[in-house]
Structures are given as structure tokens and as C-alpha cells.
Image (cartoon, rainbow over all chains, first blue to last red; front, side, top):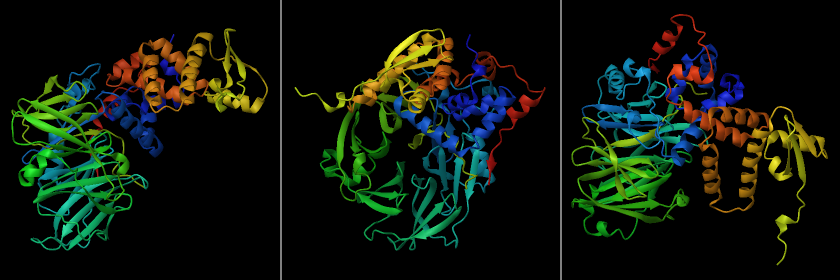
Length: 394
Length: 163
């Protein structure tokens, strides 16, 4: 008979490297030896790295959703982490359990985060970006205030203030991983002049050293206008999408700490006429580790062009190619696309604020929907849960 | 037609003998996908019969079947190769029952088939993730050895850590 308890510890360790953080934490209660083993594994950088790799692999290669949450932010509710674990989806077991009625694994952990944030001077926070399970939040009205948190292991860190604290206005903020150095960084571009474009001051916070440093802005022609921007992180690089007069994508590579201007796709039919109008009808996203642009218009039913940037050209200055991957729609009652759930499923928001899933293969909306109440923000991301600590780094 | 360079090397055959006496004749390139056999071949040299007293024939056969597929698929360097392997792996673990899975995993671990261990552990993980603590004890035949209250203590120790 199968006696799984007789599995050698090294095999048990590999099994555990495939388990989402929630399950791992819960399974500490199985018995004393599991308690000791799991506690030591989540402290072990080698295991944490392997685990992270597995969680990412899982996301890319299967439609399973156990590993992901969807986070939403809106101006009044601050950050909400919605655990989409009860979602009916083909072939999926739910990752909730008896903790469900014990406040630990409630589907919405808003209260927890709100508690954190209120505790921290009652600030309104917004989601900057996320990477390897770590989420970076910044304060709306305080330029130097950043939080890094990993909700899966319940850790958060207040990033120390940049020194000297200068109060200059933040124009672009990003967060990501320097994969070569295995380090996480926050980048903060500030303008020395409140109303004008530049001169700019660029500061980079490095988690391993727990400190800020100032770096040179390499590109003279770069502008960081005073506008809301979209920002995504993808494979060691973060991308800001600004829309004012002209649309611009600027990237920052966390490895070489260099800014680059990313050309937009040419020949976007919907774009040519009215850049201004278009600004509001564009979304930047990440798909299969590539940068994606969605173009649409105010016309309804909505038609969305999905453009994909050739991943192989990442980092090569100027040499960059965009391909129109797909035209989605016309779709009734859809407001806009939000993010990719997995390579085949695009999450979209309906006019009623409902969340729906569009399958890129079948080119149809799926039957399942999910209600996020209140959902009136167009900021929604999917992320991979990890065991990566924001506190203990050597 | 000229003979391609890849087939000019003579493929050596190894005999693998399972615990129940069942023997398998396999190409060296296939068997050496298993780290343990690779070591034996390298260390012991010309020995053609390898006895594996810890693995029975049924499971050794399945492990070798997996090795064969992966060895074959790896020879042609197609781009879709990865996809084929992935698809085949999925089929391989699809209908494994708990008992077979356990013995296969033990065999793969004993034979140091790292890739196969990865595949099988992922399957085990997919079966237990999201499960309740009680269900895990049931599956793994583990009895809780916590003192009264200890388990509850661990459950409660779940507050945010910060700096």
C-alpha cells in the first residue's frame, strides 16, 4: 500500500515546492515534523527560489488558478486583495478550507491591509507594481512613502525615506526585480520643478542594501509628464505608459539601471487620427512575459486591438517590433480589458462593473463571471503568490 | 541516402533487473536519463547487467517508458519538442492512482530521475493543494502528534510581520 508518510524528506521537499504558500502554511499543522520542515523550508533561500520558479511555471503552462490572486485598488477602498479561490473553473479544486470561517483565508483581505495602512498615518495608497509575489504600494500624497508587502506570507516593509528628503514631486514610480543580482528595486523619478518638465532626479531603492541611491538619468530627451500613467513590470524591466499630447512608453531596466524610450507600434489604424482621444482608450499589460498594448475607442460595442511586443527585442535600443496579435470583439457590454488571468484568458470589466473572462483561443466570453463589490477601479492585476521575503535579506 | 552522423555511434544495450526478477533491455542513452544508472555505468564501466533490488518490475517498466519517451523526443531538436514532452507528461500522470503514484515516485527517487521526480511531485502537489489538514493526515497516513492546544497556537500565529 502507498504510505506517503514514508516518502524520503528530500521528496517531500520537492512536493512542497509545488504547493501554493497558503497550503504550505496550513500544512504546518499536520504534525510536528511537517511543522519543523515547512518552517525551515520557507526560511531557506534555495527552496524559496525553487518554489518561485515552480509557481511561475505553473502559471504559464496550465489554466490552474490556485496560485493567483487578483488585487484591486480604488481611491476610497485602498488595496483589496481578492482571493479568487472559489471561482468555478474547469478542473480546479478550491484552495480554501476550514480557515475560511476563521478570518485567515477570507476571500477579501481588505481589512488586514487597511489596518496596516491606517496604522501608517491613514494614507491613501496605490498599487505601483508587483513582482515575484511582492507588491509595491505608494502613497498618493506623499512622494517618498513606499510599502513592500508579500500578502502570502504576511510580511510588509516600510521603505525608509530617501535621504535627504527633498519633497520633490514624483513623476514616475516603478518596482521590479534585477534578476541578475537577485534583488528588488524601487525606482522613483522626481521633477525638481513642480510645473515644468525636469530637470529630473532619479532615485533607486535596493532591498538588499535597504537604502536609496541617486542615479543619472541617461536619456536627455525623456519626459515624465505630470499625468496619471500606467505602469507594468515584466522580465526585469518596468514600463510606464504616459498619455499627454503624444503617447510615450518609457522603460527602466532594473539590471543595468538604464531608461529607454520604447517606440509605439506603427500603423495602428485607430490611433492615427486622434492621439488625444486615444489616450484614454489604451491599456498596457503583460502577456507571456511580453509587453502588450490594447487599443480601443469609445465606440460601442467595443473592439480591441491587441499588440504584442517582440520579447526578443527587449533591451535592444530602438530595435523593437510590435505585432498585431488579435482583434477582440465587437463585444457587447464590455467596458475595457484589465489583465491576463493566464495566457488564454483575458479579464475584462463590463459596463456594470462585473468581471468577465474572455478566452483568446475560442474568442468568446466564458460563462463564469465574478463579482467584486464595489468594483469601480480599472486597476486590476493578477499576481503569483510566493514565499519571497521582504524582511530578511542578506 | 547517407547515414546521418547521429546514428553512427553504436547504441549499447543495458539489462536492468528489477526486484522481482523481471528484466528490461534498454538503450544506454535511455537508461542513463536516470542519475543512479548513469553513475553505475560510469563507475562500474562494462557491467551490462544492473540489478535494482529496490524497484519492482511494474514500476521500473513505467519509469523506463517515461525515459524512453524523453530520450526519443530529445534527439530531434524540434522547436515543438517541449510541447510534445509536456503533452506526453500530462498523459503519463493523468490517470495515476495514489498507490501507483507513490511507488513510481519512490522508484524515480531511488533511481535519481530528477525530471521524473519533478513531474510526479507536481502531481502529488496538485492532489493535495487546497486540502484541509485532516485530509492531508488521511492521505499521508500521519497521526497528529501535537499536544492539545499546540495546533491551535500555530493556526493563530498568523499575524503580519513588518519592519
